[in-house]
Length: 295
Image (cartoon, rainbow, N blue to C red; front, side):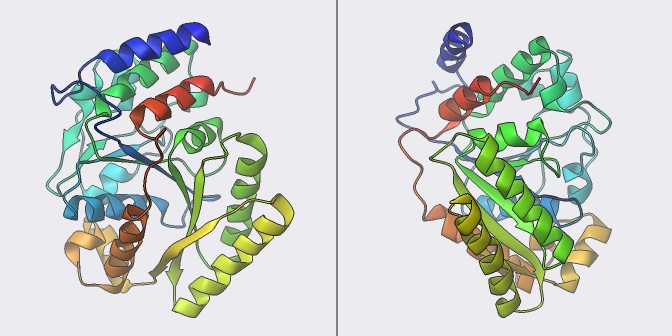
């Protein structure tokens, strides 16, 4: 671990893609990991549109598709990336080379469908991946769209992030699985500073979203002694379905729609939350290096 820490210190002395020295005191990158207990709850859609909402605030945003099994960010954006994380981990390309500009004011790091989870990579491949992440330090916000479920991949990113957002829907199975991933986070992650938040997607009313959130939050507080904040809800908006079919973010297609307004409000709430003095890409990498995959 000491060798890893020394390696990280050397990494952080390098200049980011902008050419400016990395200085945690001058620039803090907010790291947001978005996760869900099950697939199909709209996690990738929310991650993507949150990235656009941040960009509309003038932030430099990187959206990373950390699902190395079923990557979908590029599909939501209607983009066919030339390179992705597979090429980076195999040392065929660098982070700078796979980082892709989009027409939506954000940059993306595409995932690789059919590839092994980060937690199951060899130690050499894991180190390559983590070291290359430092190239993203010039971003204001990095949103990590994790895979669904509770793999070591997901837990590693959640443990290292400034904020972790759990996405659920009002469906009973989704609520159960949301509590399941929160329980695993509470028992497996030693990060007392982690800010854990909940989004309820596809609600029919404000009341429905609030009731679902209160149910999850109260149970987490009672049985896990874990504080979960209610970040907000996203309406079940027909524009979202149309946007998915057209492979465009709903915030770009219908910026004044109900779902778009919900996402922009949630990003507004996040922006009022200051990053702690230990935040930023340096802290993220230290925690990511420190978390070893389960044997």
